[in-house]
Length: 228
Image (tube, rainbow, N blue to C red; front, side, top):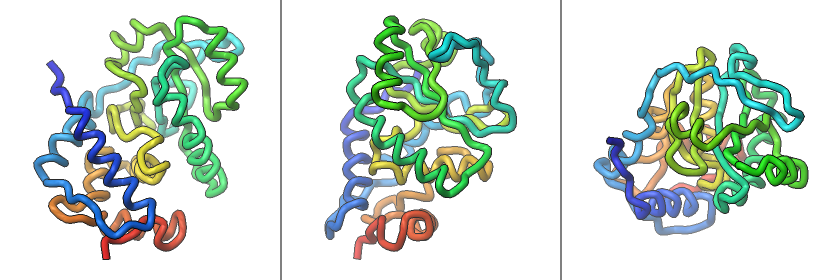
């Protein structure tokens, strides 16, 4: 049985990241034990090859993950009835725009809906201009084939279709910096659990040096504030 992670832990980590995207002076430290408990789930199914299941796009075309050869793929499992999923769409747009502007190659974002109402799904994809590749699959397929238990669930896979991060940070965390860092690290062959440990300094109210330097270079100096 998979270990369950308390909702309070997710809230704590979300507050931690949000505090660094704002001009605040006080931040709550996160213990090493708490961090270990959290990132342990990122290594679920680590390096398992994701099934090359046939899915449909909005035009009814059959698409497989193997179609995106030599690409690092972020799979976001979502649904139109999932409020957190929908609220993360604007952030996804921001992330994708930054990646495109920086000409980040060898990466693709694939949204996999589990909606039973394909009409509602197509309507939302069109009305909200959801970027990336938009596919749909049955709910039981997502659960049985891809081991998805809740929505949204974000899975990062390398260019060999191996899972390098399972149920990682979703787009809403810190409005992008966290998941973008995991994507960039993934492009460099770093699994998400190791990348996440570069973000937080356990026991201290500060972010990691490597993450801070990357953020300053990627977003602009002091986008992520230090604790000083």
